[in-house]
Every structure is written in C-alpha cells, then in structure tokens.
Length: 260
Image 1 (cartoon, one colour):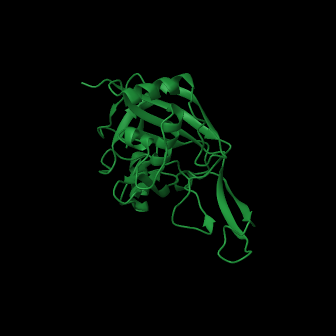
Image 2: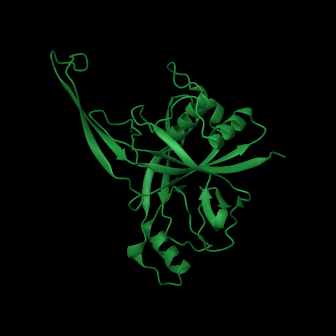
Image 3: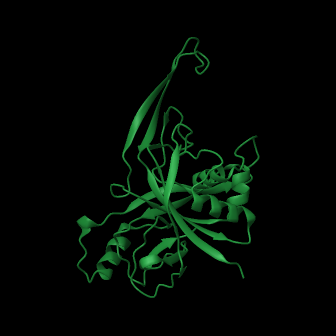
C-alpha cells in the first residue's frame, strides 16, 4: 500500500500571465492557475527539462502528470484577480509582414496572483520524494515564474496534513478549492446554498466563479485539454448535492477540496 502525503504551499508573484492560446493580437490570461502551468512550476523547482522540441512533451509533464493537485486562489475579489493591460511595440520589422511595419501587442497581466496549491504525493516515486524535499526546504534548481519568465514566483506556508480522507457526502459542505463541474447551473447553487443554510441564504454574500481551464495535454495533438471549473467557497451545499465529475477530499478543519 502506497504511503500518501497531502501537502500544500502558497505560491505568489507580483505579476502573472497564463496565456490563452486562441487569441493572437491581444494576449489574454487565464485568471486561475491551471494544472499544466503548475506542473511546469514544480518541474522548474526540481530542475526538470521543459519544452525542447516540437511534438515531444517536456520531462516535467511526463514525470508529474499523474500527481493529483488542488488549487485555491488567495486574496481575490469574488474569485477574480486584478488585471491590467501592458502594451508592447516591436519596430524591428522582423515581427510584421508589412515592410517597415510595427507590431503592436497588448498583454493582459494578473496583479499579485496567489494560490494555495495542494499536492498528493507518494514515497514510492523518486521524483515525488525530491519534490516534497524541495518544497519543504524552500529550495529550487531553476527560478520558478508565474507563467512568464519576467514574473518570478516564490512560495511560503508549507503545510503537511496529518489526516485527510475522501469526502463521502455525509454532511452539508463547502468546497474550499476550485472544482470540476461539467453542468453548472446557477439555480442549483442558490438552491443548494438555501437548503444548507436553513433556507435563509443571502444571495448578496454568495458568488460563483466559473472558468474553462486546461487540465492536461492531448498527447497526440499536443494541445490543451480543458475542463469546466467552479470556485464558490462561501456557498454551503446540501449533502444530497453531488458532483459526479469531482473527486473531493476532507482536509484540516473539515475543509473540502478537489484533487484532480
């Protein structure tokens, strides 16, 4: 039987940028840290190689893709980080098809992004043992960055949870992390919150943040595969409200998170 460890740490930066790949003239960022990006950060910390050639997945992904992770944003406004646009000009003539043209690009940037990252690790895997040691001792082989090498990142508040278990829907609950849900209906959240709070839910105090995020790479097409994610930590769900797409765990102080 594998000896599993659940840990968390708070990942922070002054700025962040997780590029959406489907827009070219104005670069937009995902608001939430997603799993492929987190695996890249973890790979940098323990010195694994990144993308080196086309049609070959990086070492960090092949060695860490099986690790279950959870993500909780910190310090947001109803799930949203403050953002700004930064403009870039390239007047070398090399970046535009028009002779002597200037390429102008706007890039959306996250301001002070911060995320609590949960990892479920095992002692049997050497890479995971190394990752545990580096995170616990706050060491890194390569400087981690928040999606772009201009935006260096750091982490603190390392926690190892002494007990955790899968959530069995045996009580009303709140979900402390982002979680997967393929069929999100606002009415379900409001109704669930009302039942969980004795039919006295205050809709002004509740919020529902929804974002489609990368969850993995398609290993034939070398493109992102996506999932629908929800973040709504102040909604109480009735124990009869079950999300079949999600894999929930109970951690410290009866908090429920999803590991995926």
